[in-house]
Image 1: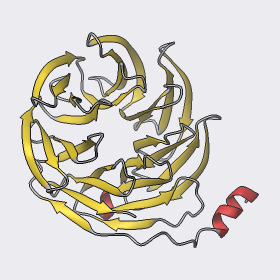
Image 2: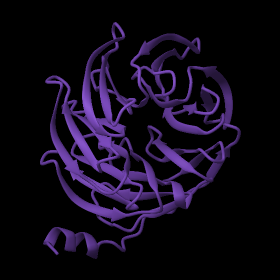
Image 3: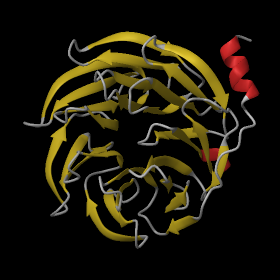
Image 4: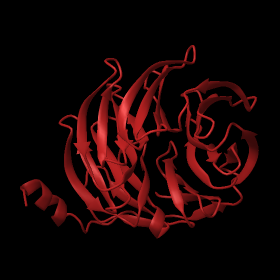
Length: 316
C-alpha cells in the first residue's frame, strides 16, 4: 500500500457530524427517476417516467404543486442558471422537452431520435449534452446549441451511455458507458473522444466537483464508487458503498459526495478529500435512484422510484 492510501486508511475512523431529520413527500408521479432543484433551493423538479410528466415539488411545504406532460418516458432533467428553463429528455419520444418554468408549459421539443437518457449543461450555458442509448449497440452523445435549439453534433459512444457530467472549468464532457465499464472523455470543441477510463462493473451515476478536480462514478454491479483524478484521468481509489449504487452528487461547497444505494435503500456520504473511507449512511424509501444537494450544502433530496416518493434529509 502506498503512503497516500495508508494515510487514508488510518483516517478512516474519523467521525462525521450527526445527521438531522428526514422528511417524505408522497405521490410524486409514478416511477419518478431524476431530479433538479431551483437556484434558490426551494423547489424540486422530478421526472415521472410512468406518467410522462415533470413534477414540481415545493420543498418547504413538502408537497407536489404542479405537474406537466412533457413526453413519453421522461428521464433526465436539468435547469439553467436562472431556474426559468428546464430541459427534459424523453426516452420513448426521442426528444428533449424545453419547459418554461414560470408558465409551466412546453415551449419547444428538440428532436434527437433514438432513446435520450442523461442531460447536462455546459458552464457557459449555451450548450447541452445528451446521452442517447440509440437503437443499436452503439450509443450517441448529442451536442445541442440552446440558443437556436439545434443539434450541433452527434458523437458515437460505447455501449449504453447513461450518465453524464460536464467540467465547470474546461467544459470537458464525461460520459458513463455502462455496457463497457468505462467513462469516455469528450472534447466538445473538437467533437472527439480524447480518453477512456476503466471504472467498476456496470457504472451508472457520475458527478464532478465544483473545481473540476475529481470525478466520482457509482458502479452498480461491483457496489463501489470509483474516484478519478480529472487532470491525469487516472483512478485514485475505489471505495465500497451500499448495494447497487446509482445516482451521485457532490455538494456545492465541494466537501462531500453523496451516493444513492438502490439495493440498500440508503445514501452513503463521504468527504471529497477522502479523509475517511467510512461512509455515513442516511436511510430513505424503497428504490432510491437519484440525489441532488441543495445550494446550502446541508440538505439532500432523494428520488425513490419504487415508492414514488421524495426523501428530504438534513445533513449538517
